[in-house]
Length: 483
Ligand code: NAD
Image (tube, rainbow, N blue to C red; front, side, top):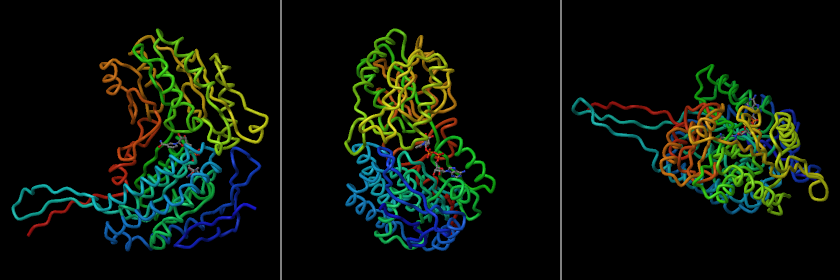
């Protein structure tokens, strides 16, 4: 019998007000129930927000280094549970063991990074125009913040919101995605064991409409950090902005890699393939368009098709190259886009089917899929698919490639493969994306530099991660002190 878990409110593990729960299933074997969690409602959100508001003043006045000690200990406790957390991610989200281990390590590193930041929250000192006056800034917490997270990085994203929010002195209500809430539950267990005072961080599980919406509408929330789809994020941003709540939404992508004639085509195919098919294509930064110069187009198509077909697909626990889709609805969405691409006249070069039989029968598997002869105005080149599907588009020259790359509603991550310095520099200057990479894949991020998107990928108000992660969760007070 799968374990029934609880919400974490005011330092206690409590069931939802209604007692209702929902099941999390294993994407590699959909008959296996991983765990049950509270199907919470507005009443539970209000309890969590009340607890968070009550704990705010004391946490805000806890010295930064003491807050840092709790974060450091949380990182240590998570490190001690790395094996368990890794296996949990694989079983609830479907990613491969290696991908999950990397993500758990990322969460550990994030807690350690912001633990040190607690000694270095910063502020600036400037010379005042008057004599005998101090002029400086100080960072203060926003207050009580809501964090709403997606399923695709179920431990890294909650970590990269929780750690800076707590470091800056805020109290928190976290609502994780219902597909993969256990990773957040483990984080809250570690925070609790590390001695976080009651009410400072709270976890409420449940649906977007029953938990996410009341959090977004709450008058007691001073900041809201959301990661998820552009559709939901746009509505969340509009609602939160009605009462001037500070809001940050990081959303979808349609990320291109440009391949120019000077590239080593085998290397380019490996970079594009790793970006497109790693994490089953379920990354906001996944490569979904390869925009390839016409002189190397055929060679690239051969190379990327060979790469795609070389990848092993299977249950994440066996650590293949590519795991299953997180849910049957995500699987159905990918297969629908395969049909859309074929109807639009693109050529399906490889993949594009549901895998069945043996290990695959009860899982949500689609192999790496490559469409060629894609035009950039096709839906498969414009809409986020969120599966292991790559559209290969031909470009006449560099200008054509850049204008194709920019001709989408998203602007999250982009890369170019070239040995030409001028092309590399122009790409960095001209690409409309929050992350620009040269001779690299679109996926993969450092935790100590800002991350966020342009256009429909982000509200583009604040960045996440690094120092920028603290900026969202802080107010800046300017002090004029005459003596
Ligand atoms: P989603 O938008 O469906 O859900 C995200 C979260 O919002 C979940 O917790 C969900 O329950 C909640 N939610 C749903 N309806 C809500 C409502 N009405 N009010 C408040 N909250 C609500 O996204 P998903 O399917 O979980 O995640 C995949 C998406 O996330 C993709 O579009 C991906 O590109 C994006 N993503 C973006 C980034 C980034 O940093 N830019 C990172 C990871 C994922």
